[in-house]
Amino acid sequence: MQNKLSGLVGKSSGYVESLPAPVRRRVDGLKGVQKEHAKLEAQFQEEVLELEKKFFAKFTPLYEKRTKIVNGDLEPTEEEIKAGEAEDEDDEDDDEDEKKDEKTKADDKEGADTKGIPEFWLSAMKNSSLAETITDRDEEALKHLTDIRMEYLDRPGFRLIFEFAANDFFMNKTVSKTYYYQEENGYGGDFIYDHAEGDKIDWKSGKDLTIRVESKKQRNKNTKQTRIVKKTLPTPSFFDFFNPATPPADDDEEIDEEIEQKLELDYQLGEDIKEKLIPRAIDWFTGEALQFEQDMDDFDEDEFEDEDDEDEDDDERDEDDEEEDEDDEDGSKPKQDAAECKQS
Image (cartoon, rainbow, N blue to C red; front, top):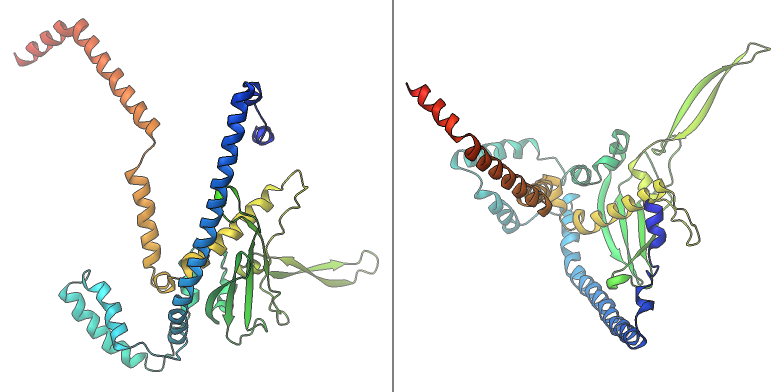
């Protein structure tokens, strides 16, 4: 059914063609007006992008300071610490404040040698939409992640850059992924995702997290000698993120549903990193961002319901009222007698 409906998209029902010539001319005129509207929509999206870039330049020094604090190259100022503490004051009572002060003093002694904020990005990622892509094996490598940053391209698109400290898994100091948009704007002036490209990871010997080695014992039928055959198989890993699926060619009539789902997920993860994780990394680290998103989901579910459901409920109530009225008319005397008998 879906394929049949898809085949009808863009096809005329014949109604417009059946209109009188003067009316068809007016329809064509409205299409011309709509083209002017589309140009303004495209201009709007382009100016929004330029505004994003302008403010991104202002955000960048804050991101750089965050990186230094996370990696132990800089300590936050007393003013910054107090501003952060002030957010939680309204939610804590006096007893909790005293316990917090005592715990802080004890922790100050224990964590005196701790540098920066260990596993900051791994913790933030595990609280985000990326959590389902991270395996236990991946965590050992992601503990060495020192920063995630973003940069805009000269053309429509953006690049995500993951920076790593020296580790036992791969040689790369940075692993990047670039998202490209189509040159032409889509319907409504929006930018349309085209494809993504990821860096090749230079895995150290035997450390590739995207594969697993399966050993199988085989026996020769004639000589009875045995041998061990090792087979390399792909295995799920966060690092598959840097090897995205290839979009189908424009002339492909059938699009593989699995490929389409992978492309949608890949684009969504990229947008989540760009729009959520990087700008509010500390909130994802503490879990506050997760709570906020949960609250938004609860708000959407609790506060709204389909209008059709309301109409059905109203209809059911009306039917119940009508049935009660009929019962009152037809059986009012027996009900009254029964009540009188009960009282006696």
